[in-house]
Length: 130
Image (cartoon, rainbow, N blue to C red):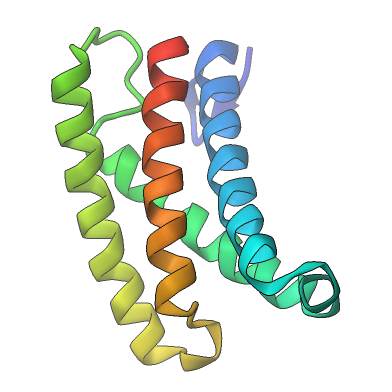
């Protein structure tokens, strides 16, 4: 039985959480690769990975605070889409603050917004299938 901070989490919740984080991370890395090309992407892979990891952590924290990891609630898809949009909006504000404080981790606007829409679509598909 997996416990974290003295709270029980079912394996279903853990798989859902990790799968979604993996999806966010890979989506942003894929968009980086599409815009940069293979050689430039591989040259700066560590930088792109750290940027994508930061986005994944911030977005997942926002999804958590908007109660989107409570799998006992069966939300209709339009409400889920609304809550994901709100969570990502707060995530974008949080990332803006982080980018202001740590300019070394800034992602280009074109890559960020393309990645945002790819992540948003894949998260909704993931949640509908799960």
